[in-house]
Image (cartoon, rainbow, N blue to C red):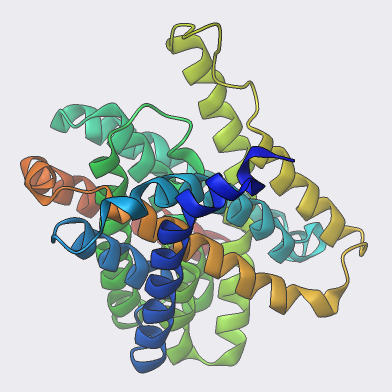
Length: 327
């Protein structure tokens, strides 16, 4: 019997799993009342609150630690089900080039800005990935690859939430002369924020925005694999182990994209899988949030805000120029 299913392991992990279940339920309820607050955002905020108040029993901590990483990886793998190569190719070569250039320039520009600000490398890499690819999901995908502190994960997710929300509100007001759906898909961080940003332009703009956004998500796999290679070279061998050349969950993500693209994965299952993905990632982000200590977070607060603002302006500007050029 695998260790996780042994009665002792079940008893150890059960309180933490119960806490995650309750937290995700609350996050879903908040999302229904306030649709602009995604379950992922609600879950991580709730985790930070719980982690900084004396309400989380010690008995819940082992289960939280056990579930957080497993839920995270499972959620990223299932995220691949939402993508198909055909959807991406429909955008055309020009728009795909815009997406690629926007992601590359945003990632490396944010890395450079983080270095200039003297911010920790782990935080900078997570922010660079989240802002250039797909927000909290991208942060979650690379947090186990790069060297980082627990508080830096929540900082990165908090910045994605804050500046993604700013972009969501600002883009419709600034979109004169450019197609809003394409611009939102190429620059806004979270999928839910992309939908909200494009919605003033109508259903067609929302559909276009989602496809462009998913084309950015495709680049999560090569970016995560590249970071893994770099970390493998940087970090010394610890206890005979090194970071994997390509993380297994990245291979799983690619496998799910392949299954969706070849119609092996039933189309009718896609919406249900999307819901499961959201639940897994919300549970994982709650667990990550509980590890955040606001005192340590405050030490990098102002510089982190500058990093988030700079990265947001960069991704929006590059995407705007690209959409105008090909549109």
